[in-house]
Length: 420
Image (cartoon, rainbow, N blue to C red; front, top):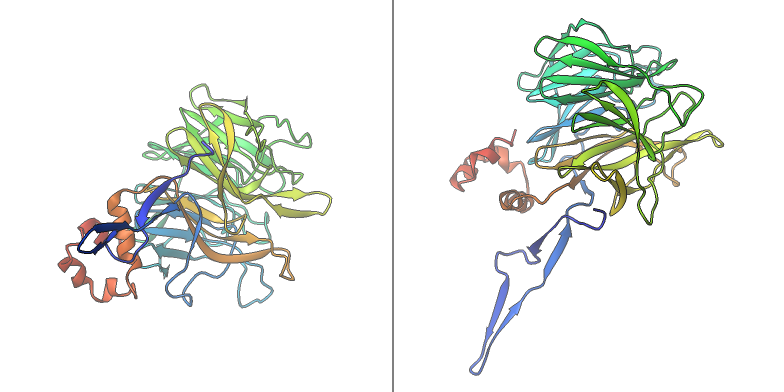
């Protein structure tokens, strides 16, 4: 619910003692230090320990999160310098424990030019990348599916059987069990809301859904840079953009039934005070508990001014059972769109880069390389202790240079495995 915040209480002192005791001949007074409440369901900026080693500002890239790292692939930054292409064929890894970026070297057959608005998801220890566009946008569009082995850092181009999705960028790629689902996207001329099902063990690809008639934009059907989420064998679509530049609203949500294999619309209920979220594309959604999602970021297109306008900073929550929107008290530190965000199994959302709009800049759109983090649930006590331990280190490089000390301190192996 909107009024619910995820918090835990911690001692405001720098020591493990929570009480001070003063003694006298007559009385003994125990003075309890005040506890501070920390709202974990609020974005905080995470600064890399070495700011000299980090990705160049970018947008249009994608991210996945594992237990120990945030991974980003691709991205775009406008450039007129022929020595520096506008697209990044780069795989960066941010280690949570070290707070350190590493530009990884990979082998194999990787995407080489379609490096923006591709789709990406992680399944076990494999990252799947589908589609995408090169620059100029829409000139070179892909319908290839690639797989990256995160242990070997090896790419492989997969050969789909039976059918092949349309070459698109801005599609959604989501997984359920042994299946991947590709939805929507554009080749810059046509916009789609087709649905393809890929059986991973056999790589058999089958079109199971076709483009539906949009109700908001009568100039054409299909959408791109929407967000998709599977709930109870139904795929919900949230927002996205049309061929006219319009961003779709949230009063009516398209829903694809995986059993009946057809599209329908569901009408949603507004927040009783704040109504509906503003229409948007280029945003992010993630699960919150068992039957809710949260949404942040994105932009909508101002047709009068002819520019994209960043969406409101608030984090919104949608209840998939009640079909009800609520605006939370949490907000983004710096509202962005075309960012790359992912959530790990601990319920931590990590967001990198994207486009901001700054009134102090000569350029209306500025790309950043900042990292933001937010919890979607209360971490267990072990995670709180581990985080506190890391924050007490003057230099996190000792986790590598003096790793033997961690063993002497009896740090559990599951935490040592996260340091690399």
